[in-house]
Length: 353
Image (cartoon, rainbow, N blue to C red; front, side, top):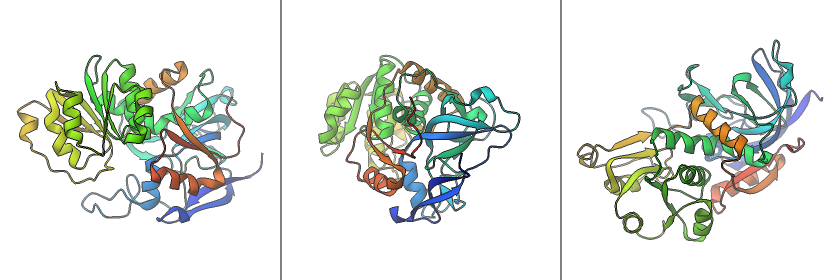
């Protein structure tokens, strides 16, 4: 194996032009770590916002920042990795070499199953826009027997992990009516699929041209976001909504919270429509409703997701694949939001069989 690898990294915040294709040393796994040969790495909005420094900081929402603070440059992007174990660090189980794995990209604040994510591969540590990546052994999940393709497996961690985290924190139950916003995006489409698999009635908000794809993913009704969304939701769910899985936020929160049924839950995991929200809190306390923030997943949530992956209980939609050298073009396509499903990069490693 060569001592160097191809990688795409950023050395500053900015537009797609700050993505540099370069040769860097292959990372060496330490104790408790493994070296993974990347077969596919999926793109996420997190990649765009980390590159742009768009996350803000407590007390300074306009500050340029990574997911949870300043980015230590240079940084290799990419949270969502599927591949094979190439080597293990000192004392590691050599039997893992050659196993097909998905990496849990979260950096947690503790060791327990309900730990909170406080960092992310590709932001707080180097990620998978490269031929190889180092990851903690405890964050590798063996999916050798999964019928899903490498591209589909790479599509799971952030989008489906975030969706499952929302669904778990929102306590979605069979028979409930679930609203999904941004339903044609990575997280939204995942939320539609998982909520439908749980036996919920899914009402989705999406743009007109993507309606059919969102229905195919499992939505029972789709409201066009170009029209009167609240009126559309009232028509599609006249009895109200039990749980909202929202990656849009903005004005939809203030307009939509009154649609919640008694004891309803509005779960927010994104701010595509804006991060400043005005809310009539009477619609919360008078109806025992809840607004819940949801950042990614816990280790327990990710274990559930990997069980689903092994059974192919969900089938991620892959919109497009690019070679690693076209990472900037791939991020530009992601930012246009004209696609449905996930965009992946192939770093040049053999495809996961």
